[in-house]
Image (tube, rainbow, N blue to C red; front, side, top):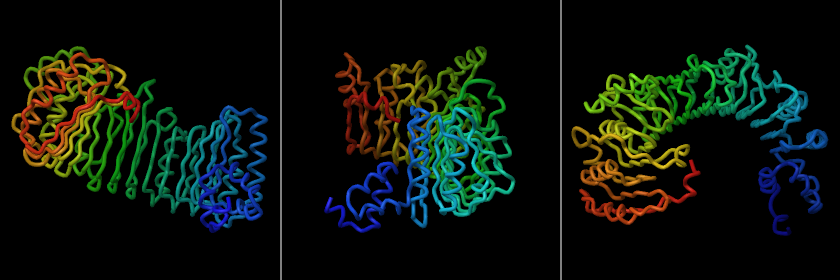
Length: 465
């Protein structure tokens, strides 16, 4: 304790700011010097257990009000509220107003309420100093016409509810400097149509896994010309994502979507350097499905990866008209049938590709990998990236079926600059495992410098993203 006491006040306050406020208060018992220093902490973090009783919440409520009164820091850097089922709109409104009066810069509120919805006070919508706003769960955004958040750069909305579609438009238009936006629509509480037109936005994440009801009118329109990072997960089979083609600054895109027009989607990613794809186009009609089986024999282009449905993209939907001239790192989901055609298309469209990783998406790691049902057709000509640029190749959850071996052999045979190639098998009892590894090492390699690596896929990886 003597060593800690020798630290400066600024450093002590920085350390205390990383603790929940309840723990901070207890430090006043450590020494006379610590008796009042806790009142100057710039970050307040109040946490109420979700399983707490009404009596527990009453005591927690008193604790928060008392601390707010005793808190003496001239500037409140951050206020965090994580509240259980007994939180009330009146309490949260009061605490936010106090934080605004203390010139709070970062506000993070996640709360649940049994009694009523939680509305933000009107003063927050016109507060000039707010830089970070993160909201979750039982909060309803009823945004006024005069909303103005001129300093807000980070906005996270996790399963919050908008009073109407106009509230969503107003909020985003009132944030002229917004750089990062995270939207979780999984609880189906956001407006069905979400228009995201933010010229300043650089980072965007959207999650939508809601599956019930009619999704035909659901869509998210994205027009963000300054976007550099995109992360989208949409498993709703609604084709909700509409991206602007004019996003020349995008560098990284992680996309796991059900999409009905893959060519339109892929045209938005022509500037990316790193791309993670789990692209699905669902087909419901049995007749169309039978046509797909027929056209497979004619080497028509189709896409089928990471979905619960039969998936296909015809050549009229996605053709070799999109070039990814800056792409150097590609990760592709290889969960179900016919994903390999997407791989062919990406190899032929990415002349500068250096890193290729094939993986199995998390939701499908608990089902044994299916063999590729139809003969894999190699590209019409050797892709430029294999001849001149690819230096790293990885295949996780590899099972060694005939078509997979053909694909691996093709890549090793033509990748002249390859430095490292690795396969990871399922962590399952497999009589063929020694044979698979031996065969893997026997494949001809165009690159004499290529190092072959092989291992079992640890079970712990099944649960990782």
